[in-house]
Image 1 (tube, rainbow, N blue to C red):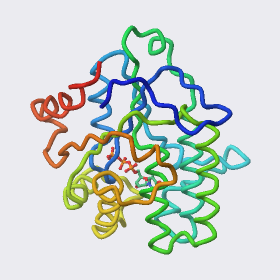
Image 2 (cartoon, rainbow, N blue to C red; image 1 turned 30 degrees about the vertical axis):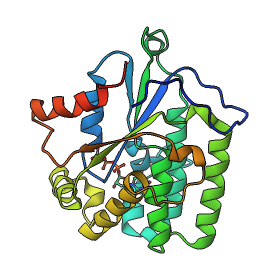
Image 3 (tube, helix red, strand yellow; image 1 turned 90 degrees about the vertical axis):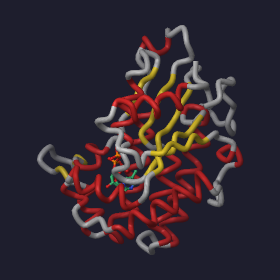
Image 4 (cartoon, rainbow, N blue to C red; image 1 turned 180 degrees about the vertical axis):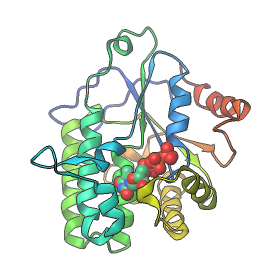
Length: 252
Ligand code: TTP
């Protein structure tokens, strides 16, 4: 991860950076992004982990306090019906979380503070929404509207969501399938290996082969650190240290 000053992104009305480096952890479903983010949190006080708002997707509040929907469950139960709704809500909830003010200790840190996101507004679009479009679960009109919203919002929020680096936790779809089975998240019971294979190729095209067509030239310049997450690292301190060292090597 580069230690150079934060780049300016496309200018927008809110493109003000507050001197924080933003890094996202990307990788397939169940690869271990949350586990890895918790490990990074231990690196120092000037690293803040912003968890993915999964619980918000499982508890979407309706107009009365009793009407709560599980949008994640709805999306897996009837993917063509709910994918567009899910993707717009995922983008909204992620933006809302990422735009919150950082805690004071982060802003007053003597080192450059780092915010670590579990996924990003970019994987929302270039992994999931794109996959749903390619699978025919988001139609051409929904895809056009989604992309329009996405580009507009990112232009408005500029550097507040701009990433300084991406950590790609790479593991085979088979490994992710095994981890997904072990964690047993109710909504994901119907997830099949071929879906994880599709998501894996989508990550590879975006972060390794760099063949995904991106909406912004700046996005192509973000440095990507590829880590082998195929090793069992959850309970192995040595494997954890090896991974963390690779992240910290260039970071102040
Ligand atoms: P992930 O973002 O992959 O989170 P995770 O909890 O699997 O991560 P890890 O185990 O590596 O810590 O996905 C959470 C769930 O939400 C998963 O079922 C996939 C789904 N999802 C979508 O369908 N579309 C999206 O845009 C996103 C971000 C998630």
